[in-house]
Image (cartoon, rainbow, N blue to C red; front, side, top):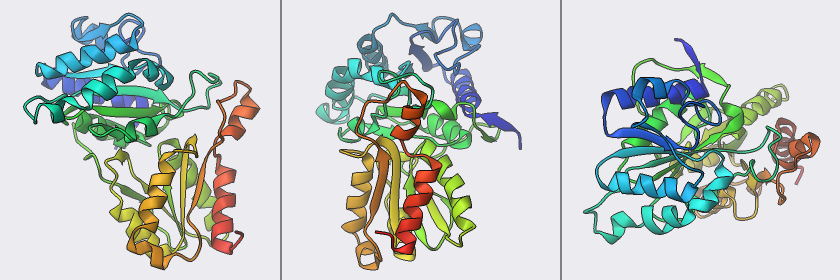
Length: 328
């Protein structure tokens, strides 16, 4: 099977979906001639024209509002927020309008829209361009939140998000855009709300999201040299969360670690821990469930400080080793 980068996989999904369905269009800042802040829409303007690849003024609120209006009239818009940080400017539209309309109209109106947004640190973009804000949206009823960790899932999840009748927040980590995976050429969907066992193991369950899945895989290879076998679960969709595979895994391993880039306080990991300890898996635990997350600080511009502000492979190895060997 051929390999595509994460960005190429997203672009292929957009191209295939727009070719097959005239209801699908893209809207965002600099997505036309410039091809998007990270090049995902490169070349699509020439293929589909400016009526379906729509460059907007610098107004995230206007962009989100246009998506809502289009979705209500039967279109399936895919909006792009240049950096996840800027979504703060569109929260009224997303939280008070998009998330609530279907409920408030008794299902007679739907808002089938996707808002794509690059999140996370690692590019030296400093505090206003490097945040991980996904849990803001997990807290809002009516929204779905998707975080693909690889190119294969990125293509399939984006297609599923486009054809979901609810607003979907689609979070793409900036460091993943150049990573590659085997990706089928034909269109396919990865269903929303289905966790995936990425690696099987017997000693420790690690639940990781987005780029932390890749770092956890690297950590697992190192730990295997110490005869510590890690089972890795990627939720892929963090709202709704498919917790059954997580609970089953913890019952098997007796230990659990949750790893994400967003800060620990109020982060997604707290919800995962809560669901584990409130389930039958609690009786199987041989150690407290641990969280490894970003520090409670804005992301620094300095590369060394930025590196240490979020979990890295060596941090995951250390936390896993302590859990298995009784270091807590």
